[in-house]
Image 1 (cartoon, rainbow, N blue to C red):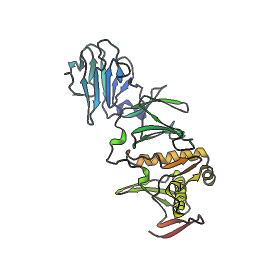
Image 2: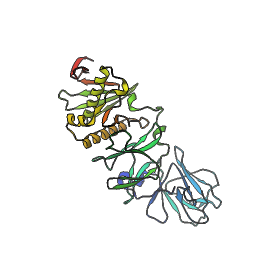
Image 3: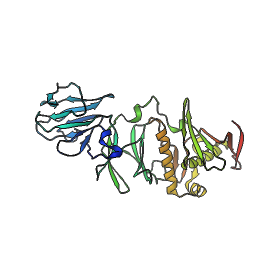
Image 4: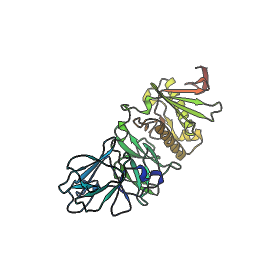
Amino acid sequence: MRALIGVAHRSGGREHMACLQHPDRDQPVFLLAHHTIGRRAGVADTRITMPEISGIHASIQWNGCEWVIRDLSRNGTWVNGQQLIPAKNQPLEVGDRIAFGRAANPVWKVENLDAPENLLIDRHSGEVQVLESYHLLPDEHDPIASLHFNPINGVWVYELMDGTEHGENARIVNHGNRIDCARSSWELFLGNSQGATTELAMKSLCIADFRLRFTVSHHEEHVLLQLAKSDMTVDLAARSHNYLLLYLARARIRDMQRGINAPDQGWVAIDLATRELGITVNHLNTQIFRARKQISDSLPDAIDTSNLVERRSHEMRLGCNQLDIYKGSQKETVEASTETITETTTE
């Protein structure tokens, strides 16, 4: 696959992304964690069509600490006028000048050697966004879709928020794919091929493995959320979407109190939820996306948050079953029979 190139802007400028300067264009070539240069179409990440260039001529690779270049060709690779020893790694430095095939061939300048990044490159302007593990599209202010990393199976997922059933409008996306959302169009550049699965030694942890503690103000105008597992505790600031999670938590606790089997606990009709919460379906979906993003941004990347809110046909539920609700120091009890809420003893 050929390299994706784009003109970087401040929110994801080239000063923060590993890249080479193309010799014939005023554009950077962003580097994959293992990046190949050569003449072979569909194989080399960056293609050079000169006849002296080998099919796979050279590689540039991130080894976890630094970038190194290796010559894999018949005709040679030069760095700062010195020919590389074939098949031997040589560390790169910012400002290095690389020539492929002949010493006098056009020079590729090393502009940045930061660790590899995952990017969204605007197909029209060339502007670049650094991709977060949970990214709202087209922007955070008015999202209609998300692009997020699923650490369980190591894939990126593009999901529209208006699906009535979990996964209905979700699809796996790969490096180089085009992503269209509203009036925007990007190419996906997955420079960090190791993804988030290398972070920490957390094996297939997901949000359901955490205990959720809601702390609610007296008039319920503020809802704080705490996530806890073993010796990890994360406190989240009050947000409007926390009340939606609280609403779903009460529904799940109510069903648990009634002895309903786990697969059937907590399901709420979406039209009922929107009426009782006084919001539209679009606003409800936006709140779900923002809740998932806030939690995703607060936890290590190796933890999957995609099932924070689960969906099935015209229904949804909180995907967690370890739940506590407090008003001050009083633990709330959701009565199964009358569906009323009371406060019990001090913790």
